[in-house]
Image: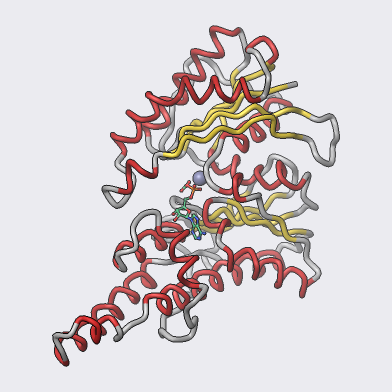
Length: 359
Ligand code: KG4
Ligand code: ZN
């Protein structure tokens, strides 16, 4: 069976065709995965502008879906279902995908499956690597989320912890902005960090020991926090700039007061260590047989390398999506949709987008 996936939760319009392989250990194969990124549009504003995003989704959705079918050499009649991201995300953006998917499913007489965006990120690991040894701990880390999930059975995701404030990707984007590096911040900080000294700038690590009163069902000590780190980078840059301007009006002297690559490397070390400490902490507590990282930040080179390293030291299998499957894409939505479809899930024609959908 073939399934069409549609993803429009943020700033990429994506459509994909995924095939069920019949192989239980590697259940799905990507036939096509088309992504129209809006980064160039939002870069000018330093971040995603929701109204511009939804308008661009409307412009792109038809062409992106047509290309995904062409590339998969599939016609509407070859499909068995349509899967779409219902939430969470920007409501105007989500509505474009949900409306399109409902119309397409109705017109082609196909069943419709609603998918949670983070279930898509988690299933990107299975799409790439085949079924994970369970129980698994999966860290979903993107521009909007930093959450740990326990997967005990395929398709069941139990939330263990999440960020109390900024997502890790959001911290990358904010730090890049204050360093004047542009949007999105992750890839450029990742690149600059390679030439910097990761111990040059003293930055705080955060450890939460108490439960969050906004989420009493979570223990809290596996929670993340990144806003203090972002503020520490800001304070560091401000302090160095003031010293520089007092001592000399010479611009070269001022910029030599701090090295952007050192800041990037130090920031990245603290983020990556914080993410991996909690991931492996959770793995130990829940006696996991594997760990994985999904979402846009899983593209980070240091995170990928250190995950493999720590996993090897603990003899713990580790899983990552390919770079194409790490940032937002519809193939992961199609995969999660197939999982739900096989479990009997069907969405009705009154399906609505839900910006704050829970998993
Ligand atoms: O999953 P995604 O495409 O969209 C959301 O659902 O948020 O993730 C985008 C986020 C951005 O914050 C971006 O800065 C970050 O992923 N990102 C990275 C890297 N590539 C993208 N962060 C760190 N290192 C990277 N190489
Ligand atoms: Zn995402």
